Amino acid sequence: MRPSPISATVDFDRDGVQHGFLKLPYSRDDAAWGSVMIPITVVRNGAGPTALLTGANHGDEYEGPIALFELARSLRAKDVTGRVIIVPAMNQPAFAAGTRTSPIDRGNMNRSFPGRPDGTVTEKIADYFQRVLLPMADVVLDFHSGGKTLDFLPFCAAHILPDKRQEAEAFRLVRAFGAPYSVKMLEIDAVGMYDTAAEEMGKVFVTTELAGGGTASARTAGIAIRGCRNVLAAAGILGAAVDEQPTQWLDMPDGDCFTFAEDAGLLRFLLDLGDRVEKGQVIAMIYPTGRTGLDPIELRANRNGLFTARHFPGLVKPGDCVAVVAEVIDG
Image 1 (cartoon, rainbow, N blue to C red):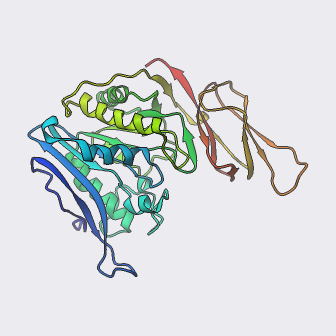
Image 2: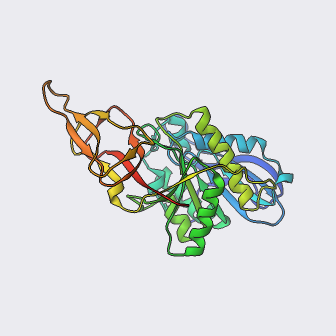
Image 3: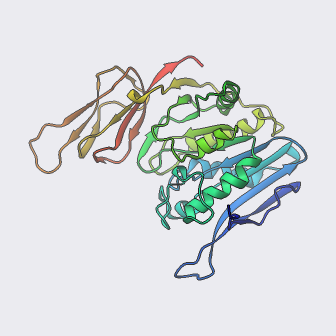
């Protein structure tokens, strides 16, 4: 396979703090010899584990970039044993545009792995992570939130894995992160995911969903900043104690957690995030908007649990995920 076209302006093996870029040549109308410049920070101090920290895998999710730009600004090499690689805006074109997918090629970074060195811009970035950055890492923390289309209870999560030692270490770091909720997470579409790429390499992978709506609150940004440092401390990289926080464990064991719209219209929720839900209970209604006088369509929960995520915009289309209900479990 041909080498990646991306070059790094940092030296991953040099001790100290380095701020630089992943530079991807990109010829376009306004810059024939232009480049996509992805900010990166490397903090290294001798031998030890490596953590790869990423945000803006989807460009309209902001808690991760806030936490990682802050960490890149404030982390000192003397406080680290090993190496921390910080990429606050993994899909930089999408982040700059405030969109979930790249405005260049409409690429969804989290469905583009393993990528291609001769592919689209998004595929080239994914390929660089697949072949260069992920192999360096022991621990991967990839921040997500709901973006412009979903809103979540703020949680940290990991996946059930065939390798139970790998799984146990991931859930240990989830607990250390200290989000208000901790989730054993089911993905409804895991093909091409960054998560899957990291886990198949044997990496300890942790992710989040920290609210949403295409913005970040003081509360959720604070959860991200504290959780990031907690993961580094629990992994033995940051010389600090874990700031332990209470958390409620949730499980998303199967597809019954999800409720989808089959009709378009105006969405009205009958419950708020964090409310208890019973199987068969009406969670939301969709009002047809083409004419008045029509009855709304009822959407019901498929299981008992806690209302964990909801569709964010007021209008919904067929196939949209409207609600997620997770089971409450012991940690």
